[in-house]
Image (cartoon, rainbow, N blue to C red; front, side, top):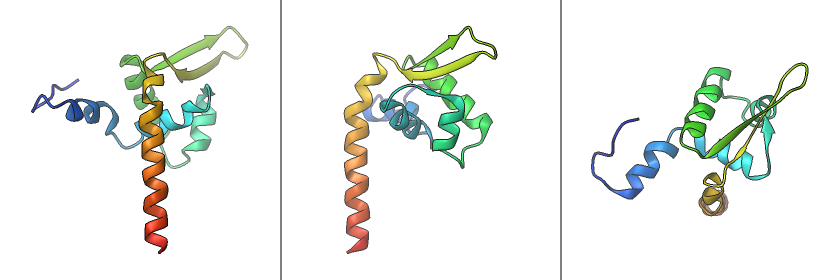
Amino acid sequence: MKHSATGCSVEEAMRLLGVRWRLLIIFYLVGGPKRFSELRRCLPVISQRMLTLDLRALEEADLVERTVFPTVPVTVQYGLSVDGLRLVPVVEVMRSFGLWLKERDRA
């Protein structure tokens, strides 16, 4: 991954979470673990390749855990790790701000 240009902590967070779909993936995982196909249904406009890349990046950052179940066919589930749970307040603030923006635009 790239290094922060300014050393700012906000830039550091945005470097990981500022990619278009990553915070939305986290948002949908806040409700509990999901299979890849469930995440695809939650985010119908994301390509399979982009979802795979973003899940791998979040997994590499230890924010998402990938669990493989020994079934036939193999079942894979994604959920928030302990570190990923630290993002719940961030997601809640973003959700609240988004609701406020929608309400403001309606008025």
